[in-house]
Image (tube, rainbow, N blue to C red; front, side, top):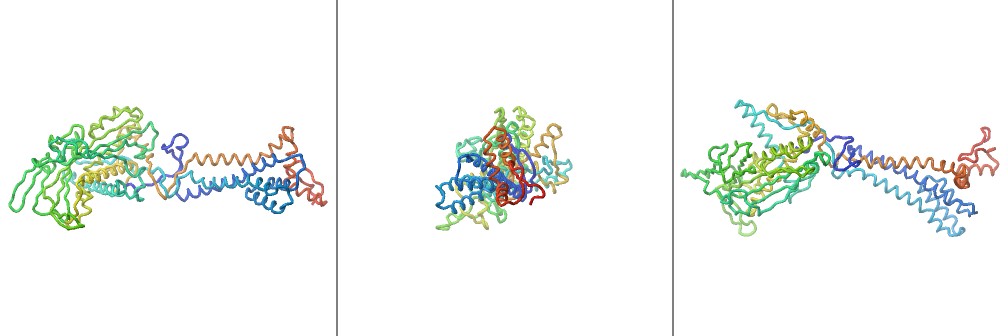
Length: 604
């Protein structure tokens, strides 16, 4: 569900960073490698031009009217004519080797003269390597933006014709089961202590949504219904989840919102709510915790025949306060005014439990009666710009309070998307359609034989469903911008808000969804590239005109003119001229006060 997205390449603003740092360029790894190689080559060229600046400065500083020895003049000629820092160092070493003891302090002077070009070479070599830092390495996760594809909300037709409604319900159920299976598989790989941190965890902007647990929370239901005691409920509460940092909706800080969810579960005491009917060959059990879609009884089971060759049976019901009473209407003891509720019936299905696989290997049969657990689900939205927040309440209550938070248009669009996605990512959704396959303990059952489970297994299962719900929320948020709706027509479609303002805000979100990508794409800092290019071009420009500008000042009396003359005379062209003149070759030379001496056309 999360992996079938197309990455958008080109320039964009990543608001994970502020100001100029936000400018980002995303390229395929192939194109990124070309860019990195180009930058490294450019820096190497800049390094050569920077050395020419350093060499000019050293030559000018060392130029003197005082007579010097031959070693000094050879060093000056090397600085004047060697465009390579490495070449200059090597030439200075060869000079020192040739002079040996014939020059005063030869090796010390060599060391001093060779250090500047070596420092330039090493510095720009390191800069070439570090230029790759403008992008995250291809083997790590880069934040990238996806291309929108069928952007909008999932929408179902809900036809009035009963037969058509059945077909629509079937299509929606199949869609929901596929969504839950994908969410469960992702949660198993990427959430909890057993998270494998595999490549499959590298798509969402964060691998998992952070949350904390507490096993001594106050039971949210009537105290007589709390089987394990009043302060033994299991609470799972997310951190404040940032719409940008945790869900990847790319936006500046003032256009973000924060969201959190709290789920509190408790094993129920339901002995007084069970009606048994002894039919001789077997017993029927009716669990009356509120009317459900099954009938007056919430749930019905029988000890007649095990439910197939599976270890457990699991049924789920939910109550969205003020929204949906079709699945289940809880009894007053379980009905909350500030939370939605989910109810789960777990049956042992008469499988045999291996009590101690390492010692006596004793077996016993699981209880035939079902165990019930209920969970409350609460939501909350925060406007981080004003610190105004909704109450911690049911889905509908929070959805209705969003308008009172003073959200701007972008924040409001994000809040509506979050709450819509949350309605498809409940504890009920983690179980519905999956049944016992949503249980971690079911993974250890083979042919109705299973190892004993710890006493807190109910908490482990609840946490697993919470993980699935959170991973489902991540997927639903991402699927708003990019999805594949093939297979849901004609019962489902993709819709945007009818209101023009809301529709424009929703369309803007479609283009601002961030994910992570490993191995296929890289994101570059445009600021880093710009600094490299601008500083590099400046160095190249300065290196090309420095001796000309300084020489002009020196020639017109704003400096020591002999240094200009020395710079010219130490050039290889003037060295050639003087060699030719010494041998009486080349004819009459002119333009000797400039960088390039010349002769008349007929002189050879």
